[in-house]
Length: 162
Image 1 (cartoon, rainbow, N blue to C red):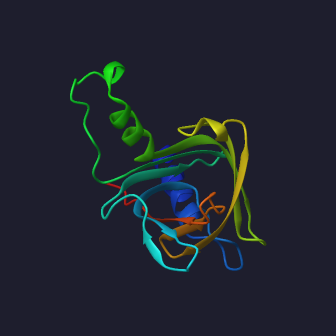
Image 2: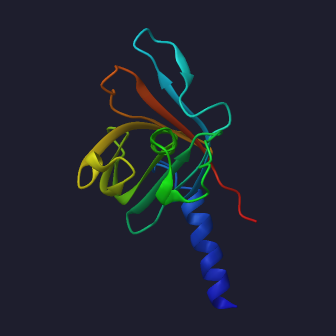
């Protein structure tokens, strides 16, 4: 029973920071939007109208990000080893996933992702820093501009405990 009380106290402490402290991003987040801002300033959907995803930040500094486009092409062969070039392209372009360690700079309002592995292999072993905002149970960040000039925007809601 004592362990349960201590666990509950820890969860409450993580969810509600003390006055003057920066709210914690530790926990599980569900994706609400995966958009991009085009060079002309227009914001559009990047992963379809109903993208799916999850982000988990652990207390010891580990993280995982998984984002999937709402509509994805299924492989006609039902075998991932025998897809067509179009099926492989869609599988890669409809997914963004990476994991590793993270660090938050509360003063600069940035998250630095030290990426161990990513669905885009060029990110393996790199660091990516994103400006973030945390308002209540909504966390969002903007990534670095892509080669086409668009800027990815990720918006998440803190997952409710069931």
